[in-house]
Length: 212
Image 1 (cartoon, one colour):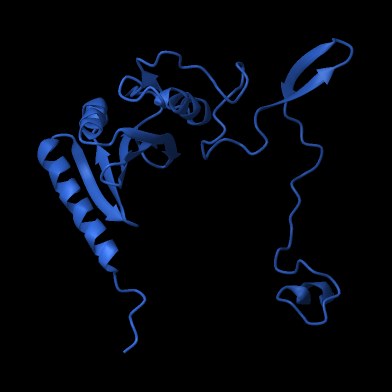
Image 2 (image 1 turned 60 degrees about the vertical axis):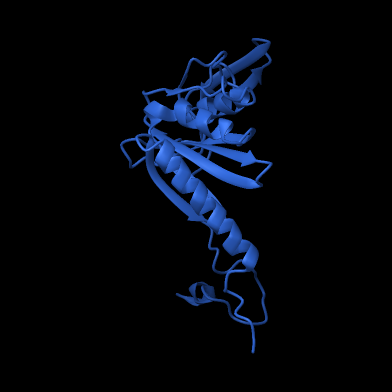
């Protein structure tokens, strides 16, 4: 009898059981801080109250998640709290991963977790630079990837593709100058339905070329 490829393996079932037990332990210990919990793709995702962000992360660290993997943000511009702050953690002893989240807006800072994991320093700076997420009590919250005078935050979904300014070296002034972005032509419209010419067969969209 053929084996169902979609059926969970023994390893997957065991891992899901560990994650479910972890989720229940977190909810029991941090009931006031946990907003939601979900297991997907063999990984536990827990959304915490931003006001209890450091308390929650400290609990996870003391529970074995001593390896800080990374921290970033996700932009949901239609939402009142448009940013998800996302941290990925690893418990090397139990070989378990967890994704911890909290939500915030453009003006409300999230407390820095540098005191919990010093490695979070540059990741929080990157999230501030690219998304504009603010972190309170950060030791050095400055831009990291863009220039000091850069306008806006490039990974926000409402940031224009062309940016706000362009940079060039002015030979007359002997320095780099910033000027408002000027597009020399309109954005071109490409017909992605018919990318090849002179094909031996007709592709969807080719009929456009024969219209009078």
